[in-house]
Each structure stands twice: as C-alpha cells, then as structure tokens.
Length: 196
Image 1 (cartoon, helix red, strand yellow):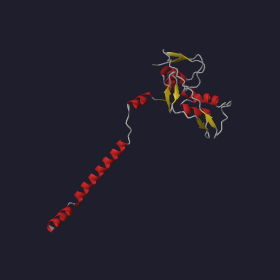
Image 2 (cartoon, helix red, strand yellow):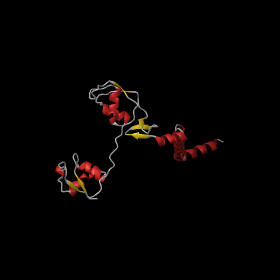
Image 3 (cartoon, helix red, strand yellow):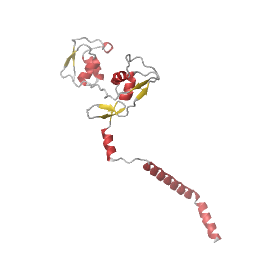
Image 4 (cartoon, one colour):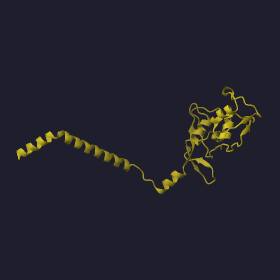
C-alpha cells in the first residue's frame, strides 16, 4: 500500500505542471459560468407591455416625451420644481427640462417673471405641465435652375432651401463667381445660378 502511495505521489510530482493547467482552466470556466448566471439573474424580463412602451417612447432633444390624446408631446419625467444654478437662463432650463428652449415663455409665465434676464442662482422655479414647443423646419425646396435673393437671405439659408444642406453654400458661391471671403455680400434681387 505504501509503495502505491509513493508511486501515485511520484506520478503527481512528474505531471504537476499539467495538473496545474487543468485546475486553472477548470477554475476559470467555473468563474465564467458563475458570472454569466449572476448577469442573467439580474437581467429583468421584458414583458409585452414593456416592448410596447419602448416602441412608443420618443425623445425631443435629450428629454423623453409622451404623446397625449390631444396629439401634443409632453415631457414624461418633468419635475414640479427646479433650482436655478449659476449660469442658467430660462432658455437653458427649458432646453434641459422640455428639450426645447422655446418653452422658456411657459416657465416665465408660471413663475410671474416679467424680465427673463433676471433670475438668480438658488431661485426655485415651478415647471408647468405644458406641451413641448417644437418649431418645424421649412420643408419647401426651391426647384429650377435659378434663385432670386430676397431680404434676409444668406448663402447658407439659400443652400438649405435649394439643396437641403447649408454647407452647400460654397457650391452656390463658386457657381456664381462669388469670392468666398465676400460671401456675405449678396444683394436683394440678385439672381443666382443653381447647379443640380
């Protein structure tokens, strides 16, 4: 019996590196399995209702919104009050809470603020549950091979109207021999060639 034990210990001693590697692989596998089971155990199940909610959720800016029966969009997680921080303006607060700076008017009205520039850090403002004001971009595009400059136009706004991309103002300038350094100098009534 003693010789068999000595022989077994001798065999183990000779194969020690192989046994260490096998134990290491088994240990890593067991730890991996335990981590996967813990991860899957903490993962909530997605119900049919949750799938519907996820599909229906929308965002305006960085704010989650919900569409009510009236067809208007409202912030879904709007706090009742907000504390003004240093450097805040009503516009910034409206952008953060509603996803649209244009709701600053609603905040001013709710808090009876007559001068929107006069708010101070630490001041508490009530946030009204009003719909989000979203300005739609003009969808009219210019068709044809020329455009007549109107009052208030710039090459950028013309490029947006013509091509749907303001960065194409450079093409308009080149096609009309307008020096890029003087691109701000276009005149009302000037006819610009458009290349499609």
